[in-house]
Length: 108
Picture 1 (cartoon, helix red, strand yellow):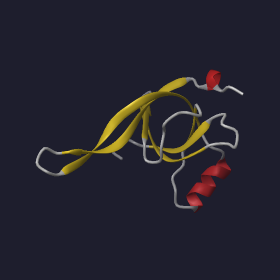
Picture 2 (cartoon, helix red, strand yellow; picture 1 turned 60 degrees about the vertical axis):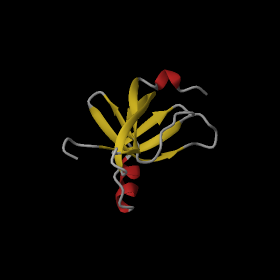
Picture 3 (cartoon, one colour; picture 1 turned 45 degrees about the vertical axis):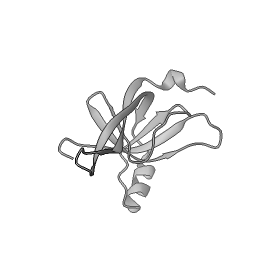
Picture 4 (tube, helix red, strand yellow; picture 1 turned 60 degrees about the horizontal axis):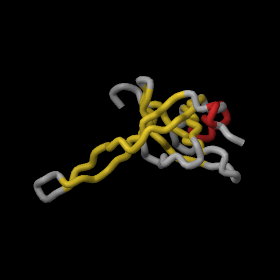
């Protein structure tokens, strides 16, 4: 099964990275890693409820190709939106990856 035809937008992957600050220390910054094809959906109400009960924020499901290098804590950006990845799951057959994410509001 190929999901490529369902991935209707491109998101930028941004990852927190530690870099030298030039004064002997380090600073943390977000670095753009890659662009990935994706499909952004709202999760089912039951999925949102489970996330709330666990103390997690889950506002969107983001479907990706199986080889997409997207990890917990990454930001996915595109179309004026910024999503913070809570975690990534894969089905038993490597058909897709699903990032469960929170849409960040301006000022977050």
